[in-house]
Image (cartoon, rainbow, N blue to C red):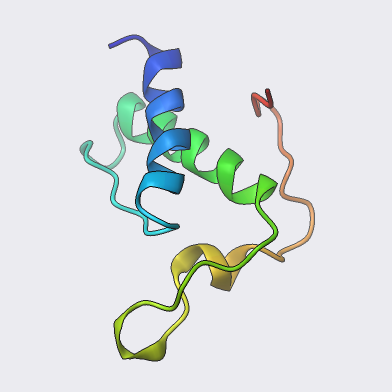
Length: 78
C-alpha cells in the first residue's frame, strides 16, 4: 500500500467504524501516522455526533471534534 492509500483507508474507516479509532498499524511507523492523518481529516469534516458507545460514553470522535485549529500542515482535504 502506498502512503495515499493508507490515508484513504483511515478516512474511510472513520465512517465505517462510526468514529471509533482502531489503527491497525504499529505505533510510530509511517503507516500508523498516515492512517491517523486520514482518520483525523474525516473527524474534522463531520459535525454530527455518532451514536454513543457502550456504557453511554461518547466516542473518541465526539470528545475531540470541537478542539479549535484542527487544520494542520499536510492535511489532504478532498
